[in-house]
Length: 507
Image (tube, rainbow, N blue to C red; front, side, top):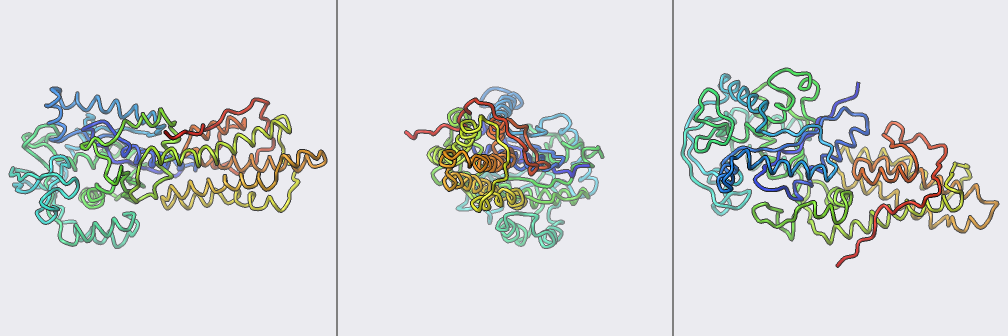
């Protein structure tokens, strides 16, 4: 039986069309999910949308449509975008799904019956765009610390979750599970800025708007966004029913979130799970932002283009590769078309594309496309053969550490070695001596094996390109089980391969 792996993105807020920042998170999650599948895991990869709240209700009113009509259009567009990016999710949850709706009501009632939710009155500061409550001390220059906009003072009857009850348990969690939150800087931020100053009970219902899941035993209240949104990770599996899916996949192995919502996923979410007596997710990784000119990509600022413009202009794998390779995972990184073009030309065109093209062309030119290992080795081969043999173990280690960009760099280091190997062995010179044809065939075989092993790993990151490489080598797609089962003979035919990537001219 395959080992399971459950990975999630956050459920995105569909107040406007998705931008490259949403794509960044989802591409990373997709690469991890694909990698685990190739390694033989039974993967459940979930993404989705968080569709309730005052902001959506207000935007729908401005557009003169119902909230559901407003979000339906954006969700259709989001699903099309994920298809354009080759996102291989297994489940797309919407908080407006009927099953989620009823399951959240049951969870709320369970917490109420246990005494972990109680009725009171909320008086405090509220940021509408972020749908977040803040204390005076948490504001920055009197404004929301997340988005920098004005907050409103609100007073209303509300239900509260006893978050303060779980302060000690959360501190113990952080102490006993040092990798529960990564990077470590995020854990320190949660401890020092939120937990140690003292947790306050959390407002979990509202009466000032209607667009949400009603509390079924007190219907003037709608369930506040975090109980509604965070429980998506278990309602999708059938909870509170003990379904086969829930038993199989929970707890989650990795919640992948942007750094701005780490607090909700590492304080509120584990506290809810503790209250429900459920196992906690193994890990929450709070990655950095893609920024444009030093500023966060923002729907409200409108400083972005539809990501399909980049996909249509440069290709899906160029966009995927840039997102995965350019930024050390966990840090903020700058997104620009100029950087995308530079990275595409340098890595995908020069290193990978040229290597595959000239290797296949030499195989066709010198041997009619039929290549076997003649085992005519020389000292020059050792570095390439060793690097090929070690590649998967090195990449595995980086993927386990979620150092995605470093994993890709290791693969491209082997591809760089391939190009150097061509320069050092000079196949065109060997071809002039008929007595050395076995040596020439061995050189080309070594190159093709290195390319095949690299392409097997690259399926997780740039799947369309990996498939083109397999097609060029005239072999079936590999998984990790047979990555080191050498191909006994390559039979390529005599058709000149198409370029994997065309060099992009900068304007």
